[in-house]
Image (cartoon, rainbow, N blue to C red; front, top):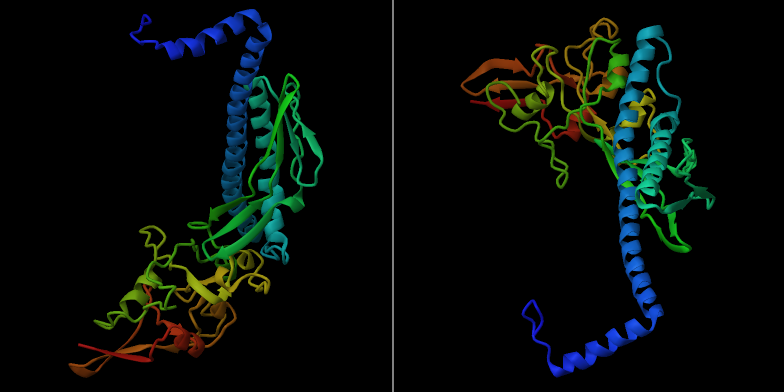
Length: 363
């Protein structure tokens, strides 16, 4: 029995004693044990290095992607406020702006800093390879930023109306110490960036800076049935869910901010940054629309009833009203109004699309 209460059987002694004798007799066996321990510990450190590099990529893209989208909206709005002319990005340039001005420099800078800190903390040398295969040596004493990624390495794809994905390719990493090295590759990252609560510069500019519109998601749309339920509970002269959509995210200071909803015939976020020209290469599932309330361009439209759907409103597409009739009093006919008290108009195309009738009975 040992001093901790364990009993050694004869068989155990036969197994243990030779190991002790050999270890004392041959120092190289002790060295091999130490090397095995170093390998296990080194592997553990390598996992830590890998996890930190992946997390650095994810966190950097999440922050810089959102910040880049915000800055792109401000660039359009501020340009319009300064000179009132040509504030929008040229076709295809809005994604490049977000990548080159925010995501790419932040990604290279933060990944370089992360690797440099890991070298200092672990005593290991870290070598990356760019997606093109160029070795990138991280020098712990160098303060410069390694150009790990180039502009063409980062991709932006908008797959749904309320966010976009940033794709970052795999990066081979080698961790070296005392002549030993372990290599691995980071997985390809596909990071989602939310667009909710960002300003819509398309609405701001086209309403001549009269209307502030934030992207809030309409909560009642059913993607399985493609139903918007705008005419649910047509009571008291009001289509309840249509009213909900028009009233949107209500702000006591700035008034109603209508919700945005998926619309395959609408505009993607990047279409909006680029002035409303539809990019045919974008998925229909990436597009959205909202409503314009208060008829801010009434004078420009010469008081002609105009569809309140955003891109139709700015193209001066004519619209028709929706009326409600009280069954108890057939002469009590009311127009559906928006939260500002203006009559709500919609083109026949969108009346059909939303499955709305021209008249509703209630009571």
